Image 1: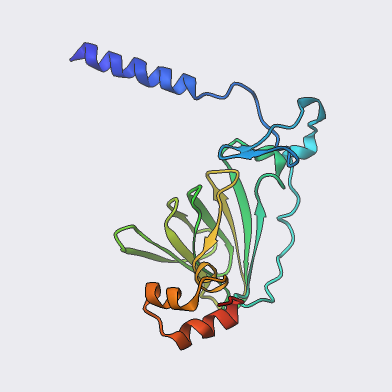
Image 2: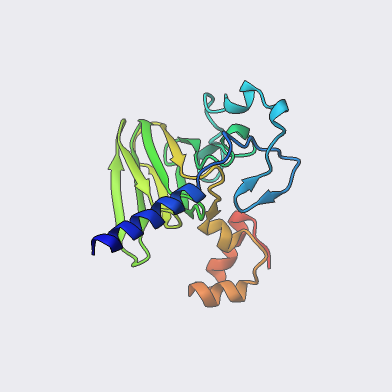
Length: 211
């Protein structure tokens, strides 16, 4: 038994070493090809300290839209220095009644920290169990990778939060837009959502879908 444990320990150690980084960083080169693991690396001789800094999160986003919310992302390649490091972040502004509709990040888990206001947040597990929490200033909540989740301003004034992701390119798919902001034929949307023709056409009209 002791030998078996030692073998598993060695295998685990070798596996860790084999996946260890062989270079300090890989600053994103947006002109190069992109792969599932990230963007191509910029020539190290052309890398500067500016590649590792991002100044876009200090300004509030424009919440004058249908969801009364704005997300300012700091993802690769806009934030070139995080490419390949497994991290990214974003600013979330919610006006009164603002909402980030049900959505998923297929490439990363998410942690949210409330800076101002009150946010009702939650996610739905693959077993369709709902985890719902009202968050105030200083509170945080984690949203597991790939699960549907949302954030809603449930307070009386504007809300502000910052979110961090476990990937430099977490990806994003917003459920209402995926269903009603494209050219998927209405009869297929109706068949797969059990909504009526009138309901589907209304939602497509609101979100800009066709067919």
